[in-house]
Each structure stands twice: as structure tokens, then as C-alpha cells.
Image (cartoon, rainbow, N blue to C red; front, side, top):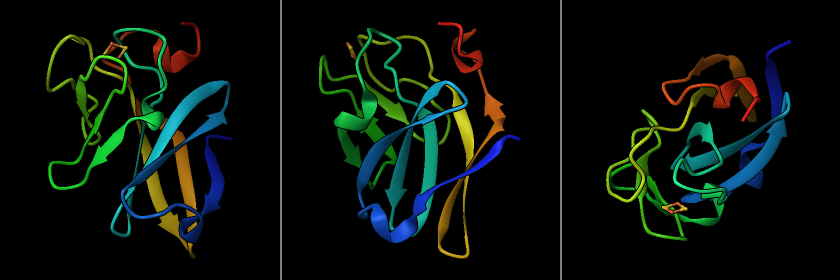
Length: 118
Ligand code: FES
């Protein structure tokens, strides 16, 4: 099964991110207004949790707290250095007030990360 209810939408404040362990993957779930997004939680530059970084709502980015790379939460692409590789993107939706993450809807331009082998 690839779709997982991880939390109630109300449990995640607007403009915040939280890490969940789903199917053996660390996934950052990000809320902007009433939309949710899901990307790989591990920065592609080093082993750092992106969900501990700052969510930039206007540009739909999250900034790694360690060295400052920003990642698009829609595409997983790094916007700024030092990271140069994208993080995976997962399906995310709100169903009946629940946040649903679909790991089968993942894109993985970073390589094996989304398969849980990194
Ligand atoms: S660890 Fe994220 S930018 Fe360096």
C-alpha cells in the first residue's frame, strides 16, 4: 500500500514542515495555506533534515538550515548552492481533513534516494 494518512491537516501549522517515516523513507511534509507538499527530508548536500529548515511560502521553497540551499517543494530541485541534486517529490493531498502521502507517486531525479537505499 502506497497511500498513507500521516496526520490531520490541523496538526500541521501553515508555513511549517514536519518529518514522517513512511515506507522506510524520511519524508518532509510541508503545509502552505491549505495545500500540502511532500519531498525527501534529507538534503541532497549532506545528511540534514530539511523539515527543520525554514519554509518560504511565497516562492514555495524550503531552506536547508545547515548551509542555506533552498529547494522547490513542488519539483524538489535545488534553487541555490551548495546543493546541486534534487530531492524526491511525493504525492500529497488532503482527504476529509487528513494529510495523505502517496509514495507510489514519487519522482526520483536524485537516484536511489526514493527507493530507501541511500
Ligand atoms: S546540508 Fe543542506 S545545504 Fe548543506
